[in-house]
Length: 237
Image 1 (cartoon, helix red, strand yellow):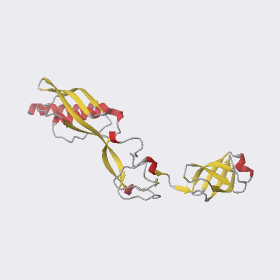
Image 2: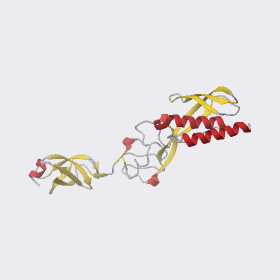
Image 3: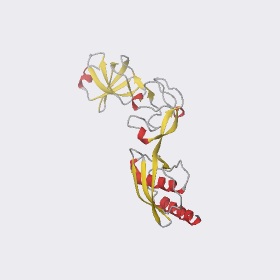
Image 4: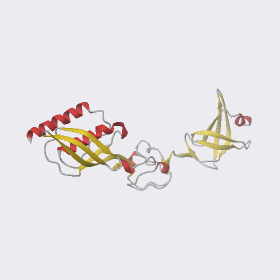
C-alpha cells in the first residue's frame, strides 16, 4: 500500500507540473486517492470549456480499493455528470465510474436590495453552484454587479438575473436635460426633455425644447446628453 501511495504522489506531482494549464481548480467531496486523481484529470480535460475558478466535485458510484498508478481513457458526459475511466492499479486495468459536478462561484446579495439601490462590494457574497444549473441570464461576475443599480428587488442569497440590474439612471423620462451638440471644435448647448430613462453610455431620445425636434444622443453624465453631428440639433441651439 505504501508503494501505491508513493506512486500516487509521484503521479499527482507530474500532473501538477505538466498539466497546470488546466483552467479548472480541484475539489473532491469524497475521500480517497482515486477520487482525487480523477477530479484532477477531469479538470485538466475540461480546459477552457469551464470558467477559470471552476471546481470539480466527484464521488465514485461503486467502491474502489487498491493503489492508483494512472488514469486512462477518461470520458465525461456533461448532461448526466457521469464519468468513466480506466485506472491502472497494481498492474491491472480497472474500470471506474463516478458522478461529477462542475462547481462555479456565483455572486449573490447578502441583504435585500431595493429597486434603484446601487450595488456595492459589501452587498455581495459567493455561493457554489453546479455549472449546469446556470445559463446566460445569470450574472456570474462580481465585477459585473458592483456599481450597477437594481432594477427590481433582489433577495439575499438568490441568483441575480442580468435583466435585474443596469447602469444607474442619471437621466429620467420627462425630466429636463442639457443637450450638448459637438462637431469638432464646435460645441452648442440647448435645453431638452428626456423621452427615456437611461444611465451613462445609454442612447436615449430627447426633444429639443426650442425646436420640438426629437434627436437621439448618448448620456455622458447626470442630466446631460451628447449629440454628435446632428444638423437638426444645431439649427436652434
